[in-house]
Image (cartoon, rainbow, N blue to C red):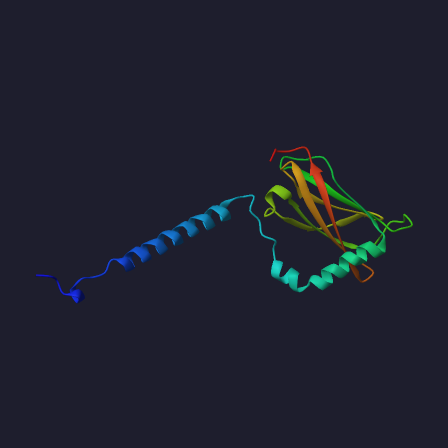
Length: 168
């Protein structure tokens, strides 16, 4: 005698649930792998930066209009912890040093953009500002400078090559 239709339990919902569960597990594994990769980095405060994009564009335009010369360099390694002096020289269009500026630095290697350092540079001489940074990796580094002078904010970005240290 045949079983009534209501007594048989269909199996197809378990197949769909099983496939969805396998997909979710795969997604979680991929997120874990991506998050553990040291080369993976996300721009900090990207939403806030997008909201303030007009101010950023204005600061970059100020840099173009100012005509300043900004020379950034990393000194040799000093000490056991790959410390270097990061030095910036600021000159106006006439070649005179720019004094009494506040210079903020954000420094990170291109290969490991999540490893960011921030510092406010100290004036050494007229137009010369410096700080100590740790640069253990060789390769290209991004230096982002926010310079506040005479009430205006100017932004510069420089790419520096580090040739002495641990290879990438």
